[in-house]
Image 1: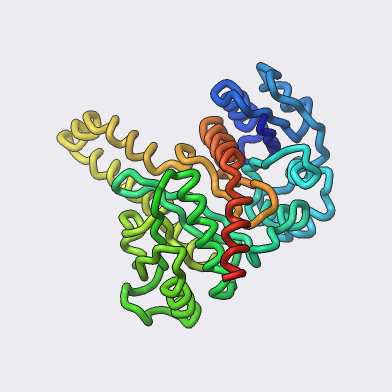
Image 2 (image 1 turned 60 degrees about the vertical axis):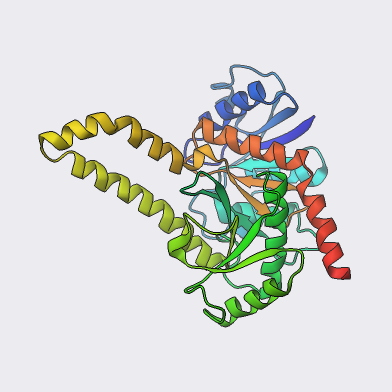
Length: 333
């Protein structure tokens, strides 16, 4: 059985959506067990079945707006997030799913689980939808504001294996987010990464990718530092919401527009669903000794279920150990 720890108190709608998401996962995925960490009394309000589900009482929650995540983790070792992460370090569980504060989860994972020896920096890697129906990996969307070029190449290796094992892409292609497609564009960091990726015989590098290509890129993995990729991710989210609202506003103008809105409602709903993070799952934190997946803070039960499903697949496919083997081989080349 795959054992997954659930931070039941982290997120905008905890613990209701986390509990219901876990119940849905148990029904749909036969080889998992879930342990819910949180306020037992609150959890039981929504727990309609305890089949392959256990509860561990926690004390406190890491606040979503926590400004000092390292201090928060160290001073709240009995919080739902800290207990869930600690359970993986102890071997009680194989992975963690949390909708809690992103920076606290990254900091807590470093402190309580630890980083793989072969990776010098962790990274958080969400999946984003494209116009041709694919999901591509965006890395790193916020874990490292400053980073060395060689560490970004390690992250690309991790994404390469994730794309093969979880997304089913036989020959994943890597693109570097930059201000132009020509070689030599961008900052010194971008130029260094470009050179290293061009020389790497294990990765298929397509070159620089401009931000305007993000939703229709010539690759399966988009790579950048945490600051740049985070801006890209939030720009996509904001643009999608804004375009949806503007379209509705225009369709509400005049009788013909209102008729158009009436006939377009199913299309608009499909558009919203296509762009929703709930349909994809969560963002894996690369480079840890255990599997940690960050679900969106506003995840409802379906989104949390998808994050659990994703976590189970990563564990089942032994992604971290495969990355370790590849990076060890790179080091010895």
